Amino acid sequence: MIALALILSFLGFLHLSLTIKRHAWDTLGGKPSPQVARLLQCCGWLFLALSVVPCLQHWPWSLALTAWLGLITVSSLAVMALHTYRPTLLLWSWRWLSPVAWSQRWIQRAGPSSD
Image 1 (cartoon, rainbow, N blue to C red):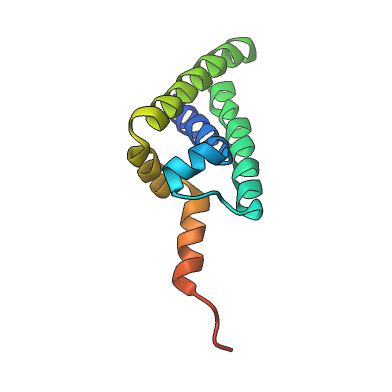
Image 2: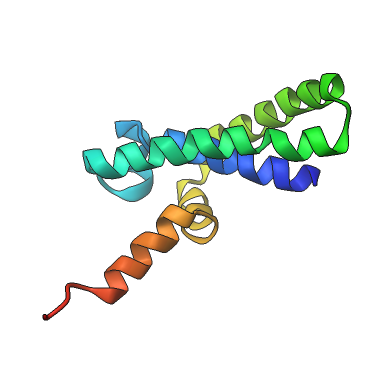
């Protein structure tokens, strides 16, 4: 359960960081469109909000919030370190863990309809 909270908070900070122009340029190779940036931002906040749920299921609420703050600190440091030292690993983790990336791949595979 705690690993799930850590993964969700990592994904949240990863999505939020990709809305920043410089980080998106380094990781994705370009600035996302305003619609994609808004989607990344909404997903980022959603993942951060969902990351508190496993902590609340595992501990009493006072301890859960303290542990959650520690987990989001660790995950934000991981995203920052990956942006700095291994942006390709960050891109790989975004492509394989993010539902936004999965949906973009599905849309690109489907292509425009010929109807």
